[in-house]
Image (tube, rainbow over all chains, first blue to last red):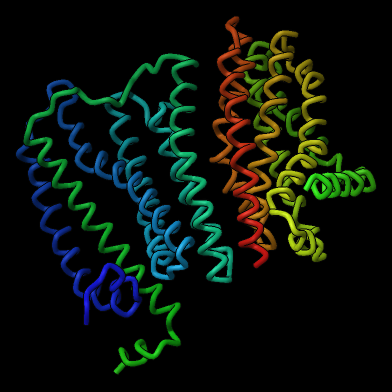
Length: 243
Length: 222
């Protein structure tokens, strides 16, 4: 079998490959998060101004990164699936959405937990918080739309269109929310970190980011595999899998 | 192309004129919803002045979204939408005409009623004028985005709710600058920055949304 750029765009090949990759991703997630959390909670020094509360950063910031990245990943694969009629790409896009929404929720939740002791409030209508909340709504809209349409092809294409429109709008939303806040009133508290971080803090955060990447890969692969089984259930190769 | 645009527009206007009560429902919803706020928040003029632009804008947004569903739904149900799409022109013509007719039927009456609503909230004339200009620039954006949502959710069971969930996040910039314009005037500043951004948003939406709506129509009627 020759290996080309498109080899793994075929559902059976992808299914076989991810069958090997999913356990590896879970293992990477377990190891990286164990080391990352250990470094974050025990090795990294206590922050001079915030004390130990700041340690939520090791979950919060990687989750926020992943939430934004996964939306772009989702929009990208949805667009590929729509433009080239690639079934697998559309399935990956659909599989990425719940994980992205989960990370968005996690970022908001940990942000609230961080905000209460440091700012004295669970929530401020700050530009970043607001745009992250709207990102969650965008994820929910995408998921609700593709779930509501019974016809798979139409669901994939409509979802792709919505994801692209959303991706175009994300910067507009971000800047409008930012100007809204600055034009409206100066933010009394800002979530910007101190510019300098101890190197152990940075290492722990990077490890946690990699761990979240591994988690996202594992979840997206698993969900895509389930979608493949569901959609290709009539295919010959799936019946062979049963034996 | 212009003939098709005018034909679709005139057809929608005629249909609206023959269902007068139904066409006025968004406006009635708007007035009723806005009037609920003083009852809920309390009648202090100071508070009402503060929240008025936002209340008017949120209610206008909801009124637009609740009415936009029928923009394509009835045409889709009786099959006339598919016949329109068979016309030898790009569906973007239909999408634009539909957005304009929705604005004429819903957005324009909202804009005309807004000053009266503003009086209920004790707004100054300068704020009222800015509110109306903001609505003039902003309600077309809502009609254009709503058209996209309506085309995406064509014929779905929970279409109305879904449309609102899809379109509201996309409409937040319009809401921010539209309500913000009136709020800045109330605090004594110039609203030209907000209104310019709203105008820029209108241009960008008018250029982009009809094409996206046309693509959504093709996906939904395939």
